[in-house]
Length: 349
Image (tube, rainbow, N blue to C red; front, side, top):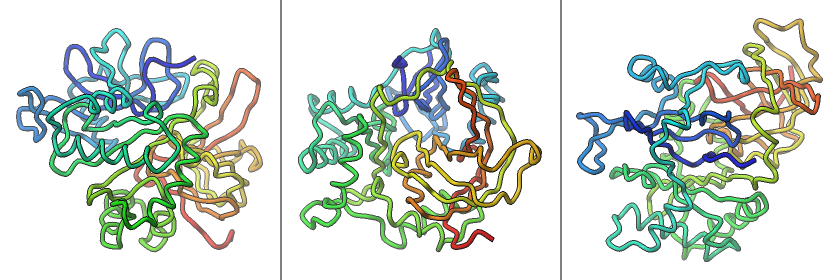
C-alpha cells in the first residue's frame, strides 16, 4: 500500500506553518514520519510570500527545537522503539511532491536562476539516459520555494530498474566533457568531510575511499547536486504495521559486504556477513553474530558507502526486526547519531 507521502516529499503543517521532509516509504496510518526542515522566523534568511524562514539541518537540533517550541510533533513509536518526529495526517496543510515540482517548472515562465538550473540538470539526465519525465522530480528547498543563493539541486529518481540504469549511465555523463556535470575536486571533498564526517572520528583518507566512487553527487554548472533513488512500490517491504523493532543498543562491528545492490536507494541497505563483534552495549550476551544480517540507513550520506566483498568497520544502533512473516533478525541502523559510521578496514583483528 502506497503512503500519501514518501521519501523526497515535504509536508507543511496547518497551524504553525512548519515544513518537514518525509523519511522512508512506510508510515503509520494516522501520521507521516518526517523531520523538521524549515520554520517561520522573523530573523530567517529564507523568504517565501513575505514570510521569513530558517532552516535546520542537524538532526539533534531539530529535536531540540521541536521539544522546546512544538513538542506535539515529537512522538514515541512503540513500533520502532524510538522517539520520532512526525505530522498527524489531520494536521497536514500541503504535501509537496518532487514530480509535481518538475512538471510545474516545465510549464512555468520567468524561472529563477536556481529553478532553471535544476530544470536543466533534470533535462540533461533525461536526454542522456533512458528515463522519461514521469521518473524524475525536484525536491529540497526549490520545491518549497525556500531556496537561497547557494542552494543545492536535489533530484529524485523513481522506479527500481530505472534507478540502477541511471547509475551506470552517470559514469558516461561524467566522462563527457561537453556536459557540465563533474565530480567534486579535492578542496570540495574537504568541505564535505567537515560537514558530513568531521565529528565522526573517520579520517579524511578513509572518508575519501568511499566518497570518490559515489555517482549520485557532484557539481552541475558549479552547483552541488544530489540524486536520491526511490524503489518501485512493488519492491517496498510491505506495510509499516508488518514490522516491530526493538532497540538493542550501540554496536561496533567488523563485517564483510555481501550485497550492496540496494546501497543507491533511500533508505539504503547492505547485506553483510559479521566477522567480529567489538562492542555491544548493553545486550552483548543476548545475540549470536550470525543473526545480524544487514546495515540500513535513512540518511543519504550512507548511500554507495561500500561495495561487495569489502571489509568494513561499522558503528551504529543494533535493532531486532520482527515481521508478520515470522522472520526475526538483527540490523544495524546508521545516521541517528554523529558518531555513526561505516568505513573501510583492511583487517578483521
